[in-house]
Length: 577
Image (cartoon, rainbow, N blue to C red):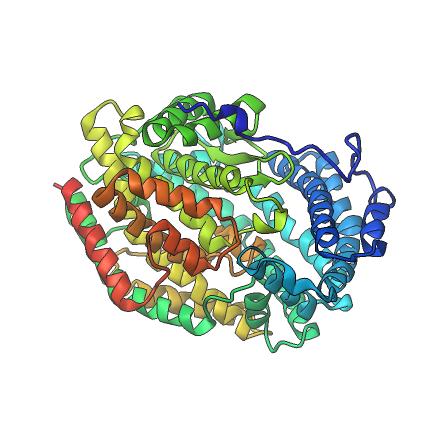
């Protein structure tokens, strides 16, 4: 490891907010924002100090919010943590929206704003202007309602469980059995999972209707025809358009979907089944038992640190820092929210990883993925202002997905057996190929959802199935008798409920990550140095410039997708023999 441990996760000494300040209510916060609002800005130095103080205050409040969110997801049944998060949504967030609008107006009104270095401030000021343009007071109560309503998905999903062989299992734990060589076991567990989801099916459909209605009203209030167009503006998508997303959908359907169809057809042949069913899609085709790469969350952590250290000592230092601080919650358990995430802690300068590990190979990939996000959190913390560290998802996912591939040669730390290692690596590459159509399906579905406001649940069902089948025309999987499972398969995608339109980034970044891996195979350590240099930029450059610093292109056209998928196939077949 390097000697940089002491530089990791350094909490900047407060200069504006008192060291002993803790957030309890708006009355305690408001004086700090009012001081910024009333403070004269007379020259460049007072402007920079104003920005530093505002950044510090936003970091303090932002970290408090993040801890409230973390604590809620760690135990969705804990009423106290839920109430604290809801209090923030109801009482703090709406007021923050209002006063931040006023502060943004004050900032853009500074007559000498152009004296700020554009190479550092252009992206931030562009985003500030967009926030001003989108601000509507009538949307504030809607934002509050939306955040509360979106959290209902976690509460519903976090309590989904099945009973199997005398044990109560979360769905994450149950998914392990879908890799069991015994087909009867797989089918039984799959059906139990399906029954569990079906019991919540109508509740989730009705919840989604409510979310759609509120989101559409937000768009109308802001002067947009639909929520899709509003959200593109709100997410600061300056580097591509909905039309570019449509090109991505079409390219993936044309280039990648047929490749996936052949992989699944080969799976059917190797399994020797007349009908390939959904419970046959995760099992090893050679009849091997599901991989068991670690014992528990502690073992997963320690092995991941060793893997990261094999790539770059700094990466290991980052995760080691988080381990020492207790900033990891990895094991799946009852009442825990679904999914996984890395949460940047803007004042502390560290990060928190949350996931639902259950002893599977997929968990290893999730862990190194989230570790990539964590490394990004640490590297970007070198930027002075919080606003320079609020990078877009297209960059965040490049960090995480590249880390998956960078670490792949070192997974022998999880798999001492060379055949198991090869099996895991093969699954990784196969997963990348297969996930691209799924990403395109989810994103195309979202475009339909929000450009067709007022649609019925039946219309939503029909269009979901039509889009799914468009990308799976060559997929031999038989859904006979399981039509309801297929019709509501999208319910498992958290992003649709909680973070709308945050999904296409995975596809764009996945292409970038494959290009990063190709660069590493060609140029070794230089690719790692390029990666670190790009992540250190935070969001002080455009997405294209950040990708270029990393040594890759920000592209998702048909030719580029074909080029990268061809490379990926060549690497995949090295493991598939």
